[in-house]
Length: 247
Image 1 (cartoon, rainbow, N blue to C red):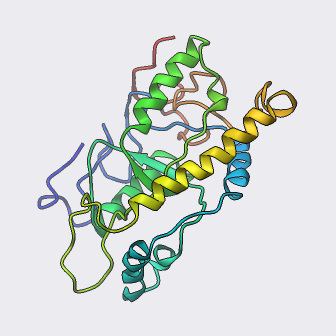
Image 2 (cartoon, rainbow, N blue to C red):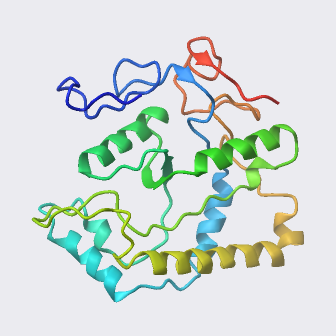
């Protein structure tokens, strides 16, 4: 739910409020099941190790864009100045395309609220929630092994401007130099993972990489109990309006 930011209380960080909640910092009470998905962390760690074997590309133009963040008034953008690298984190998926410091900070807060402080907002997205929702339903019909899902994204631009005197640029203009190396790096890292799966299928991957963490949606539809849901909310359905996915 979005409230007009010009009319919100001064204590609110933004006008984005979870469904059914009274403040932006409250867990949503209207649950649909697609709010949070957790994937196989053991498989993620293997994928990260394989991806780091790839040689990442960069462009002078992309480096020039990153250099603007070195002139920020504090060191909070220090990571934005670094060359391409492999990172792990959580993706926030939304149909709203946002840009700017305050909105991005509020999205970081949304990630924390929806995951009981366990999520680490690292990247924006749009389609991931829909894809995982479809895969979860396929898993409920025993057509997909949810523990085999790997989510990889390549960052090509930033969700906020550097703190300089330059006017803000439209974020969807692909002239910052980041798109080309991002796409190439996504391919080169993905190939490392696919090659390892193909060559090591019989010895390692055929039976799957067993997760040690919870995997699935906010309801525990695939079994187990998510540790990112406050007691009495969502998992049991006793304290919320719940719409569990059909089996």
